[in-house]
Amino acid sequence: MKIRTGLAGLFFFFFTGCSGSPTYTEAQGFNPGHEPQVRVWLRSLGNADEVTIGGAGEVLVDLEGVSLRLPLPLEIERHGEQLWMNGRNANVSELTVHPGEADLEVRGTAYSGFLVVRAAEQLQLINMVALDDYTLGVLRGELPLPHVDPAAAGAQAIAVRAYTMYYIEKKRDVYDVDDTTLYQRYVGQKLAPDDLNLRSGVYATRGLYMSYRGRPLKAYYHSTCGGSTTDEATAFGEPNRLPLSGVDCNSCQQSKYWRWATVVPEQKILEAARLKGPLQGIEVADQGRGGRARTLRLRAGGKTKIVPAGDFRLRVGPSLLRSTYIVSTGRVAGGWKIEGGGWGHGVGLCQMGALGLAGKGLSATEIAEHYYPGAQTRKAY
Ligand SMILES: [Zn+2]
Image (cartoon, rainbow, N blue to C red):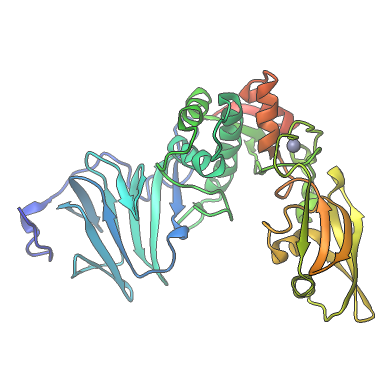
């Protein structure tokens, strides 16, 4: 039966009292002893004002207290502050889609849990998902490698839970984290090359997270430290907490980015430093833990400027200048050659180092506790 939409036409499918999943508001916050729900803004889907929710079978759509059973797909559009569903005004600014038998899908990716659609300044999709399912979706996004030892996946899962619970505890409006690298890359149910081992790592560490002074640690992590991890002060200019003050790693040599060389066009450097050329020199001015540059000194047009290395790296492009662990700089044809090591900001767990330590036989908790000294592994649920 083809079901036409429009709320009057849907009255046949109207019923109430149907729950099962927690509601949007009930699920906010972190309730010790229970697996928290995470509100993940699917920001990577972009700014489009319409979205199709796919999947199989019928779903339950909650329209501010009224529940409707509808077949998929659902086409949802934003018109100002109102949402339209399958071409008709739904007269709400927020609706919730609960899955039926199968996970909901958006643009070919399946998501565990349910979806909240909001008419904000743009159409906003929030995935409400249990923390362990979210953790697996982050491992799939963050560790797309052919082989990930379950102990390394478990250590990463312990870090992901802590980092996420740190944000859940903030109890912000609307969402806790988004699905981009601003927080953690989350790809829902999109399988990774070594999905079985990622799942094994998440299940084996269920509910475990890093705790520091009785609270979830903002457990930063990165791809490759290049020898030693660095501290928050060097990387972000933030005060140092003991678990994020840097440790020796020396287990990430198998990373492609253990050492690297790159050529950055001069114009890019000048723009990133907000200087006018020609560029006469760029060098490390001040070094922090792990050999990472805290600041860089640039000379251009007769002026000398000191810039924070982390900001400079992000403005140049974090995939071009892979880290602030810089060992040499020099002028070459086409720009400036920069040699260094590591990939990422260098704080907290080193993902490639965790793989190395797992290969040496360390357990998930041993690896996590190595990278977050002074923090404890706790079980939240
Ligand atoms: Zn490392």
